[in-house]
Amino acid sequence: MKKVKKEDLAAFLDRLASTRTVYAPCRDGEGTVDFQRVTGAAEIADTYGNTRLSIKRLFLPQTETLFSYRNGEDGPVFDVPARPGPAVVFGLRPCDAKSLGMLDGVFANDQYTDPYFTGRRADTVLVGLGCVEPCSTCFCTSVGGGPFDPSGLDVLLSEVPGGYLAEARTEAGASLLGGVPLLDAGSDELAAAAAVKEEATRKADTLPLAGLKERLDGAFDHPVWAKIPEKCLDCGICTFLCPTCHCFDVCDEGTAVAGSRVRIWDSCLFPLYTLHASGHNPRPTGRERYRQRVMHKFRYFVDRLGCTACVGCGRCVVNCPVNLDIRQVVGMIRDQVEAGIRP
Image 1: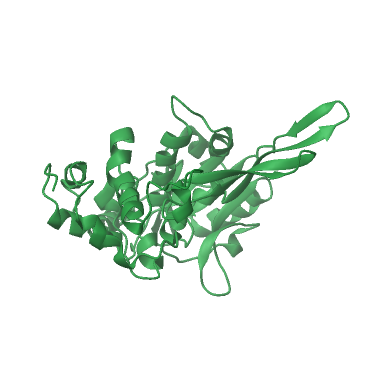
Image 2: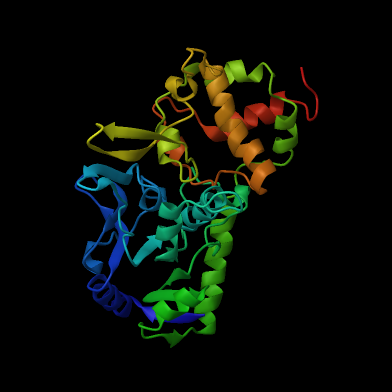
């Protein structure tokens, strides 16, 4: 564990942005903080909770051209976009880093590897910043993470007076820190950082999930699903802002002469998402669609990858236009469904 002064880190980020792509949390004119490409440390927001949009969009863009095609003189020509190149994401929260590890299980597994997602992942160094003051809507500790969880990060920074404690978690992280003047951290600084971590962890542990998976195993037809989504608008905000939701559609745009194949975000809450060409829809109402969202996050994903598809960032809680709180939904399921018993 080393210490880096704030001014030294800022100078390093200025140099880094001149040689490779650097993304960091930036504040717009309305006060909203999101990850943007920066040219120097002065553009980076100094204080923020979670960004409005998750880090997902840097690795799985909302709209992405997979390839383009055209008829050439010698036949069809296919052009695949080049990889973006080396990048650094600075200042992401541990929950966002954890979400990328979950998406790895979807886009880079034994059965399928997505070259677009994995290419960006391989070329990007993640520098995380621990949450000193978790938002009131955060519950990362409840889903296996934490405000200072280093999982998935190359470097974890913890703020202390005058600078940051820096912990390299990978070789890529150690190599990156090689360009920053580092100091030995004092025992007082280490103790103060540990106390802040303990307090932040306590604040973020707000959602009891014990036994939820077992309750969901026997609750597919439970009447609770008719009650929960009564006020849901099917707007998809929660899925688009969620760092682990990854539903997408693939569209061919163009003519027989030229065009492109495009991947765009989609949502399990949209009525058209499961509409068959025959006109049949296996999820015709909000009851089935919202059940799918909850089941996927807290049951199906657990069965497949051994973890919940939720990092407790609270974005869906903050931005839902009708205040449909996933924490209350989980509580309703916990209270109304008996483990292992189908109604």
